[in-house]
Image 1 (tube, rainbow, N blue to C red):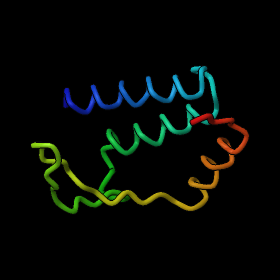
Image 2 (spheres, one colour):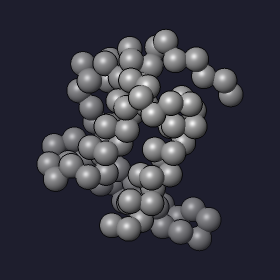
Image 3 (cartoon, rainbow, N blue to C red):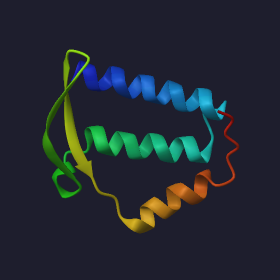
Length: 86
């Protein structure tokens, strides 16, 4: 559980750094999606564990994560106006 929390915090920090604001609708929607992926007690409805893969000496859990197409479109549209510089 502590690993999940550390990963969520790192991902949230990364989103804030990319969007340079904590109130970005795009960032909020991506944070909500990540939280549902990592913490939703009903995740069996949209997440299927498919095994483990070794990477850099660590075993990484692998999963299929399915989202409703309407939800995916909402996230995409909320991020459509975001200007990302790579």
